[in-house]
Image (cartoon, rainbow over all chains, first blue to last red; front, side):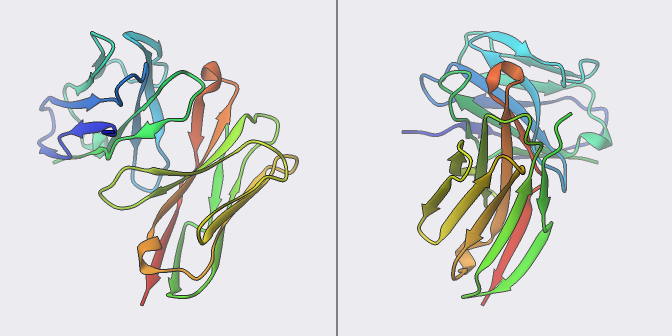
Length: 113
Length: 114
């Protein structure tokens, strides 16, 4: 069974440029999560989807970050414009239901120059 | 804001050494405690999910214990091998966020040298 797929794995951009990350969860998983991991810190939840509905986006900086999961399957996280402080690893995870174990993708490592 | 703390921040051991790390958390907000191993360039891999006070779980050379009353969990690695080199994360699952919000510690980075 394929795990959580994320792309790209690495991305280098200049500040003020837009960037997008893609996540395909495990087949059949209704809940999808985006996490941000800054260097030396643990992952922090940005947004959680139940199917296509964003049910917890309280930690998503909405001035520059946006996310969508239009058909309740794969998801895209976008930053526009990127800032130097956005350099981090962006992890996607999925679970069957809200209270089930989360499975993580390998993450996208973003470097903003 | 829940505070999940891990110590030490990093650890260098020799092959064959046994080692252990600590995860501490507020005991009043507890559903479960998760341990993950995260190797560089790979996905975080779930090691254990622990829910009951006094739980002890084992997977090969790795084991973990849980004390929910005092709010800590220990992860032990017996006879460390170079392939154990990774960051070990613990995460507290709490009642907030529909019961599946994970609050992660900052991790313990383990390096096992030959």
